[in-house]
Image (tube, rainbow, N blue to C red; front, side, top):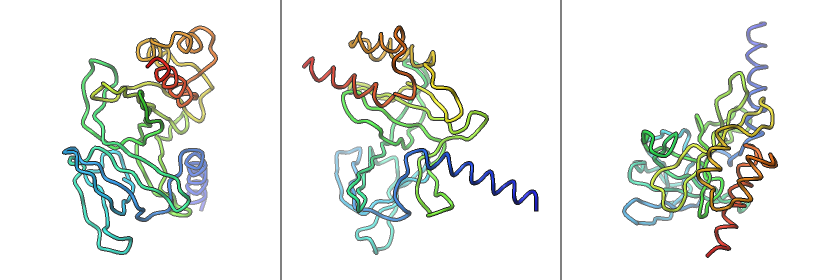
Length: 222
């Protein structure tokens, strides 16, 4: 009985972390678009990937039609829109821990910001929560809680690179990783870099805001 209670409490704690992250719609197929690597664009009812390494995406011609499996290797990205009007996008990207590092096989990344510089979340799995059967973008739950890994990909990059890191248990901090990333990837906007590495005004948890500020700066330069 004690073991069951412990497992139940762990589940509730984990579910709490999930609810704090980006929650996707209930299990099912939603009207969306598939972008193929050969340039083809196809409209269909799309199901979100359950894990980053999923080797196929499931689609339907209509919401009640038989499911069809599309190999992930054929796709660049997928997107779908919920009945509430929210659109979610996943991109099938090669990635590396650093520029010049070993390039890892493509996997499905959740798109946080799309622009001159795009920001992605690197997750351990896309799973269905126990309550409500909702798709959720989740992260490894260890001694530091739910760990979030952010990746960056600029327009001319062929792969995404490790950009920032944070966790639900960890303090609001400016990691050495973010400082290196800001200096290297965001060097055009010196004021933004200074806010991160000198003034300590923006931390890893501000990754989305940081990329939005950078994109605004780059758009004004054109």
